[in-house]
Image (cartoon, chains in turn green, red):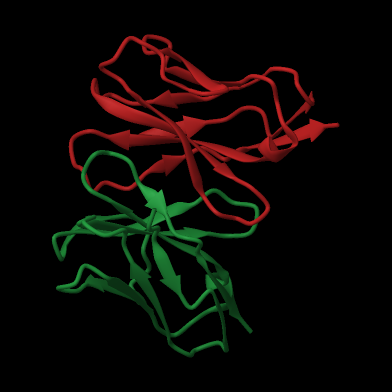
Length: 111
Length: 116
């Protein structure tokens, strides 16, 4: 079965640079979620989109923005990167049946 | 706001034995969903099992089953016949039923070690 696709899988950026993470949900899933998992931490919810509209917002910094496109893929844009932004970023998708399926994650390292 | 507590940072079990991971949560909602996710060393988050709060029957998926006690706000995961491949971090998660696109609230996780 098709799974959530995230790209890139690994990303290295310097402080103050910008990063864009991409997420392709499972086909026919209309809801996308973004999570951040720091080292040794549990995943923290950032933001979600349903039918291309922002639905819920968690602890997403103002330096981050996201959107969902007409083909349902989503992008997380991160600007003015800080060392503390180094983490594993997950995208998850669902078809509103209260089950979120996670992608493999993008490991972001800020140096 | 909802909170999820996993009081066991680490658990160890012998292969083929049974282990139970604990999870408690706090919420003022009457309808919600609870999940257990597994995160092996690959860091992939894998959905193990789901429980709807309005269902009294405990969910079961092969060797995995839950003990859902709504009044006590407790949601434990039992793994029977433990296998080496079960070694992972296990996260308990809460999801409000009010909005389908709400984010999950996770506990801090339990690191499960399987002794051969």
